[in-house]
Amino acid sequence: MHLTLPDDWEMLQYSKNPVQGRCAFADRYQFRFEMNWSDVQSPPDMERLLSDYAASIEEARQPKPSPLQSGAWHGLSMMTENGCCVTGYCRYFSEISQLLEICFIYPSGQPRDGSAEDKILSSVHPVITQADACQPWRAFGLDWCVSPELSLSRCTVSCGLAELSFCSQNFRATQTFSRRGLLYLWLKEPMEQWIKKTIPKDFTVISAKQRQHHGHDICDLLCAPSSFAWTDLLFGKRLLAVSAFLCPQEGRLYAVTDLHRGKKTHPTAPRLSCSCGISVSPGGAQ
Image (cartoon, rainbow, N blue to C red; front, side, top):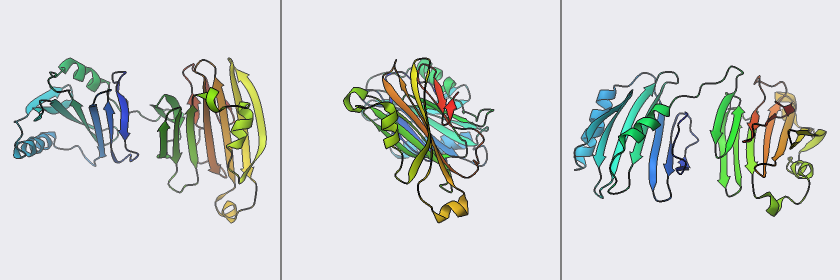
């Protein structure tokens, strides 16, 4: 899903489950926004859904909620015991067969801002796979495209590091995207030497190229298994392609890896971009 939120709202909680999950955003004081999604086989009865939710609120001896509507979104507004206004909206997206629930949480004593809610809700829409068979993603300062048959399997976000891995159901294909900062603290050697040290021990670099593109130093590696494995005979030989580059404007190091077996099942290589618009794929720049 794509949505536009205030700049000072950061994503602090997230789910890796594409079928049913939740993301939560907060400002510097409290949680302000929640988004829940779930796959559904057919359009739900929205009137019944909201009626059941309102009944559960009243059963909990909370003040009766007020109905709301913003475009195609239907919702409720209520006040909590500590004086916080909370509004919740639901909408079914037929393009992806998903029900989306969005919740706005206001600080105690702050009135509801209907125009701000309308603006955010109108920005929400599904992100459909592009014509080149890539699924576009933007999060944690990264902008990338991943093969659509891969699912998010690992996410690491910490000071100076954001890294996400996507894996196929049979674990035979993995694509990883990363951005590293604070280079002056840890990058004490040329990028080419450092990126080679990140290659798994059971792989050997068989091709390495260094180049420049609009002031960005780029390193491309192609790696093959360093020893024989029976699984290579059963499922195809493993190949690992890596592209990394330094963005001088940001002072960050970007890297994208593509691990697959035999003939690739996905038609398009993954892509990773920096804020300058420089985009690379394992095996060459775009």
